[in-house]
Image 1 (cartoon, rainbow over the protein chains, first blue to last red):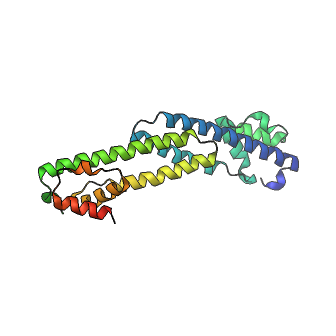
Image 2: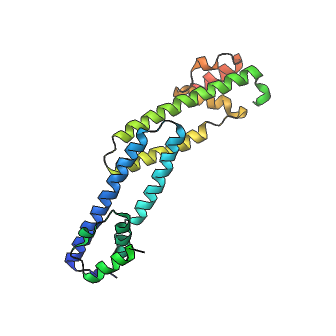
Image 3: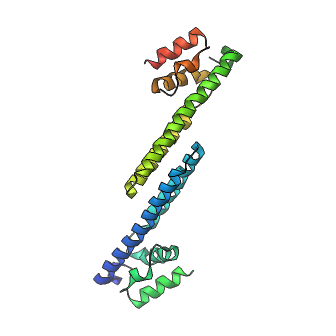
Length: 106
Length: 106
């Protein structure tokens, strides 16, 4: 599925949905790190925070790849993880919604 | 300079001095990270914290190498950085103290 399979309206919906999920996940991560940092007492806790940040950065950099060939899969993953809501995708074709929700259930 | 160049008393002083410097530097780092984390507002701030932790972890892992051949140099560096105090080294031979303080001034 390439860019031409997405209408202009769908592309706008997809971009906004993508941004919503990204904003939700990253603001949750920021809160999480602030809470973790507040309870750091020893150096091991600090390196554990460092390991956590390394893993999350790698995961987020990899996951938020906005490209039309992978968008259905990215949306399915974000939906499963709860960062994307079905309401964000309102206006996409039935076919795309069916693919996304069915992949999200796997 | 190897372990046999350090008397038992000097080895005990060196170990305690090393631990003091390590404790001072790492507890300052922990406070620093807690303060930095408290002011994280955006994802860029989070990744900046991650970069900072990567660099500090690498530096600390490399610097706190307790081995007699490098101890004079490590102490000089820690003295220059302020993590080690001259009082921590009280009881080392004049010769060692002279080497450490002269290296620390370089």
